[in-house]
Image (spheres, rainbow, N blue to C red):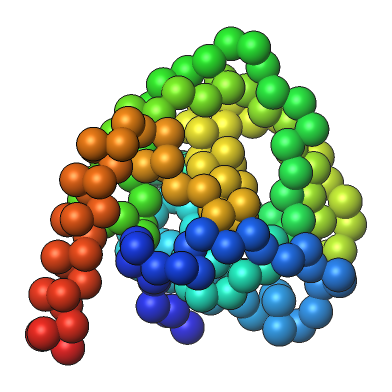
Length: 173
């Protein structure tokens, strides 16, 4: 089921999310819905607060090539256990901030530990786009958006554009 994606500014996007105690059938269904929603958007990552659920769950798939095998991932309670000193800069966007992009600097590589859909603990080291994506999505779980890395003027400009977009959508709705 494709779920509606919250648009910034929305107070639910700024909340600290609750850890998941155990993987239930409902949480498995939520992860499945979030992956469908992310692919439909289209995007490469989505965090539970973006669909109005304040739980620590992110989904992502950074495989972009048409001839490459997709790699959908659901990470419950993801936690960065190590970050490289080396930084990389990517032009980031966000499904909750449509059509707005800005360069954000983050660690080039990170190691992340999480619970998988089967409830087992997993750990992996990510680099490149995967590293950027996983850090961006984990930020969502802590109430942080990519525009929070920008200067106040640029952040205010993007926020005003989103407020206008929400008003236009409400009139059309």
